[in-house]
Image (tube, rainbow over all chains, first blue to last red; front, side, top):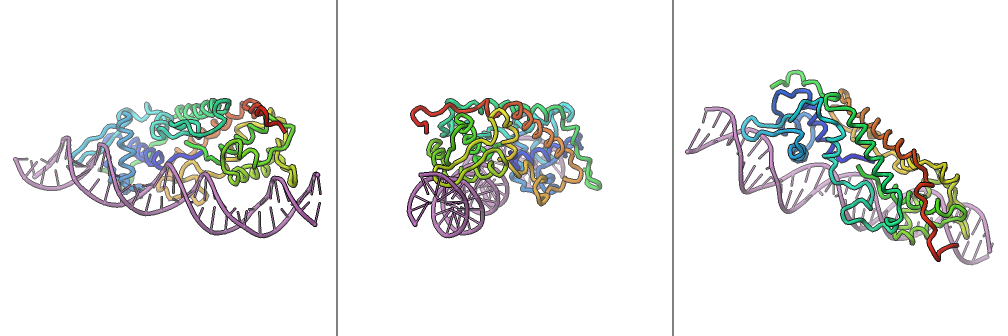
Amino acid sequence: MRLTSFTDFGLRALMRMAGEPERDHSTAEMAAEFGISRDHLTKAVALLARGGVLVTRRGHGGGARLARPASEIGLGDVVALLEGGTAMVECDRADGGGCTLTPVCRLRGLLAGAEAAFIETLNTRSLADCALPPRKGADA
Amino acid sequence: MRLTSFTDFGLRALMRMAGEPERDHSTAEMAAEFGISRDHLTKAVALLARGGVLVTRRGHGGGARLARPASEIGLGDVVALLEGGTAMVECDRADGGGCTLTPVCRLRGLLAGAEAAFIETLNTRSLADCALPPRKGADA
DNA sequence: GGCAATCGGCATTTGAAATACCGATTGATC
DNA sequence: GATCAATCGGTATTTCAAATGCCGATTGCC
């Protein structure tokens, strides 16, 4: 039961942007603040942009910012988007896996229901509930 | 958001035992049925025995069986036991991780709550709800 | 006493995640 | 229009934990 650091990084970036929604944040700046790989963070940001959670601006002075107010962005939706296509158990994989019990297994549906409860619980809160305060002395 | 195959294997073994609770099941027999590593399954069974979910008998003709009726074994408790100490995000690790946001992060508690909802949802069902029917022609 | 099973530590392999690299593209600024 | 800073996105590489395999010790029925 663990999330990828890909999801972790994406959430950190969103928390930072939720705290300073008025300006663009470059991946270089955020990677430096968090002390993480810039390249990896870039991919998470790109995915969030494709998912419509944030908008990016290219070119000099560009970066990313939230596409909507933080209070309208559910945490569950974000996690579901970032966590993407990872299967919880073997039989949920795209190729079906090799589990010999799949035809008679009643566990699969139960797990899916529990996962939905996980996402739903997160969706009772929004990004606004975990916005990071702007860093002192680092305002643009 | 994925479970280890360690958890997966443990659940399969429990489903098999729930379907035939009257007899012992050896790890060799179950590994053969599922087509998985016997050694790996053995470790999951040992953990479940330490956790009091099942009891093992050594020696000739030994094996494992459920410690209680399947209807009294919650799926959530089993998953929590098997999934054990795996941290969902970096800051939940035993060493605290290296996330620079930990002191001001409000996400951590929200994730813990969602994980609890996941386990709780699974606990509305028991092993009896996903017992495997005995295999035809393989009765002891 | 012998065999069949668990027990549990350790060494090895494997695979996916994480990281790094790099060229292409975009677009603001001068 | 030239330049430079930023995203974009594909690919190659590294890393690490999970998964596997191995083996000796122990237990306990037959």
